[in-house]
View 1 (tube, rainbow, N blue to C red):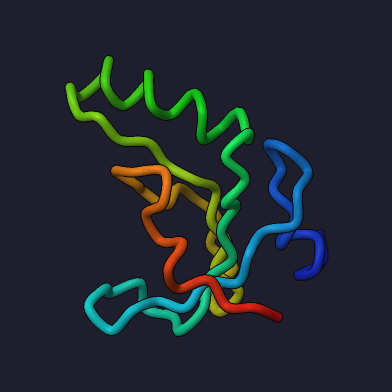
View 2: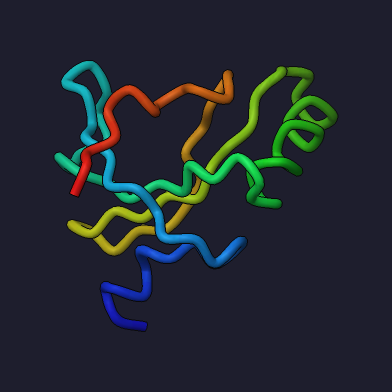
Length: 89
Protein backbone atom coordinates (compact mmCIF):
# COMPACT_ATOMS: atom_id res chain seq x y z
CA UNK A 1 0.00 0.00 0.00
CA UNK A 2 1.45 3.37 -0.96
CA UNK A 3 1.27 6.44 1.25
CA UNK A 4 -1.37 7.94 -1.04
CA UNK A 5 -3.54 4.84 -0.63
CA UNK A 6 -3.46 5.22 3.16
CA UNK A 7 -5.23 8.58 2.93
CA UNK A 8 -8.33 6.75 1.68
CA UNK A 9 -10.52 5.37 4.47
CA UNK A 10 -10.59 1.55 4.18
CA UNK A 11 -14.04 1.49 5.80
CA UNK A 12 -15.92 3.83 3.43
CA UNK A 13 -13.54 4.60 0.54
CA UNK A 14 -13.63 8.36 1.10
CA UNK A 15 -10.55 10.59 0.97
CA UNK A 16 -9.55 11.41 4.55
CA UNK A 17 -8.95 14.97 5.72
CA UNK A 18 -5.57 16.31 6.74
CA UNK A 19 -5.82 17.22 10.41
CA UNK A 20 -3.46 19.43 12.40
CA UNK A 21 -2.78 18.10 15.87
CA UNK A 22 -3.42 20.88 18.40
CA UNK A 23 -0.54 21.59 20.78
CA UNK A 24 -2.63 20.32 23.70
CA UNK A 25 -2.70 16.80 22.27
CA UNK A 26 0.23 14.44 22.21
CA UNK A 27 -0.28 12.58 18.95
CA UNK A 28 3.44 12.88 18.26
CA UNK A 29 3.02 14.13 14.71
CA UNK A 30 2.09 17.55 13.42
CA UNK A 31 -0.46 16.11 10.97
CA UNK A 32 -2.70 13.07 10.73
CA UNK A 33 -5.26 12.00 8.13
CA UNK A 34 -8.69 11.33 9.62
CA UNK A 35 -11.94 10.14 8.06
CA UNK A 36 -14.51 12.81 8.93
CA UNK A 37 -17.24 11.17 6.81
CA UNK A 38 -20.22 11.03 9.18
CA UNK A 39 -21.72 8.26 7.01
CA UNK A 40 -18.68 5.98 7.46
CA UNK A 41 -19.75 2.64 8.94
CA UNK A 42 -16.66 2.45 11.19
CA UNK A 43 -17.62 5.77 12.80
CA UNK A 44 -21.35 4.98 12.95
CA UNK A 45 -20.85 1.53 14.53
CA UNK A 46 -18.41 3.03 17.02
CA UNK A 47 -21.14 4.82 18.97
CA UNK A 48 -22.95 1.58 19.90
CA UNK A 49 -19.74 -0.41 20.36
CA UNK A 50 -18.16 2.11 22.74
CA UNK A 51 -21.34 2.51 24.77
CA UNK A 52 -21.90 -1.26 25.04
CA UNK A 53 -18.28 -2.10 25.92
CA UNK A 54 -17.30 0.75 28.26
CA UNK A 55 -20.54 2.63 28.96
CA UNK A 56 -19.36 5.90 27.39
CA UNK A 57 -21.16 7.88 24.70
CA UNK A 58 -18.29 8.16 22.22
CA UNK A 59 -17.08 6.81 18.90
CA UNK A 60 -13.94 6.80 16.78
CA UNK A 61 -12.86 7.68 13.28
CA UNK A 62 -10.22 5.98 11.14
CA UNK A 63 -6.80 7.67 11.44
CA UNK A 64 -3.51 7.50 9.55
CA UNK A 65 -0.25 9.04 10.78
CA UNK A 66 2.01 9.64 7.75
CA UNK A 67 5.06 10.24 9.97
CA UNK A 68 4.91 6.78 11.57
CA UNK A 69 2.68 4.84 9.17
CA UNK A 70 0.38 3.98 12.08
CA UNK A 71 -3.29 3.30 11.34
CA UNK A 72 -5.91 3.23 14.07
CA UNK A 73 -8.84 4.88 15.79
CA UNK A 74 -9.21 8.57 16.55
CA UNK A 75 -11.56 8.83 19.56
CA UNK A 76 -14.39 11.39 19.45
CA UNK A 77 -17.10 12.29 21.94
CA UNK A 78 -19.21 14.45 19.59
CA UNK A 79 -19.83 14.39 15.82
CA UNK A 80 -17.84 17.63 15.44
CA UNK A 81 -14.87 16.68 17.60
CA UNK A 82 -11.63 17.38 15.74
CA UNK A 83 -13.27 19.12 12.80
CA UNK A 84 -12.02 22.52 13.98
CA UNK A 85 -8.42 21.74 13.01
CA UNK A 86 -8.97 20.22 9.54
CA UNK A 87 -6.36 21.59 7.13
CA UNK A 88 -7.67 22.63 3.72
CA UNK A 89 -5.31 21.27 1.07
